Amino acid sequence: MDIETVSMTLIAHAGEARRLAFEALAKAKTHDFTEADVLIAESEKEVTLSHQGQTDLLINEAKGVSTQVNVLLVHSQDHLMTSMLAIDLIKEMIILYKELSKK
Image 1 (cartoon, rainbow, N blue to C red):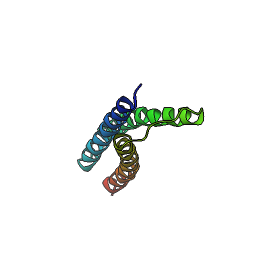
Image 2: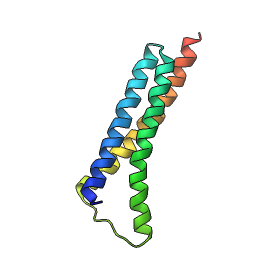
Image 3: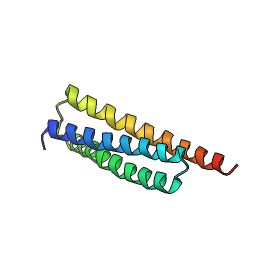
């Protein structure tokens, strides 16, 4: 697969993961924790697909197959990392919403 396709695949899955995570947060705000949990699980599946693309690039690099780095690839890595961070933080926020709803 060419680097542009790999990059766009990473961006698409990472973007969907971030969208689902923020949707989960919105559900948690309304105390719909069942749906929030479902959305976070879907978000994690999407980010895993994106992360797999990055892992494939790293494996190829370790095998001696260099990847041409361009702005699109850097942008895709940025999307992946910010999505991973957003998911982690939103999961913690959902836990807080659940604890607050018990009080």
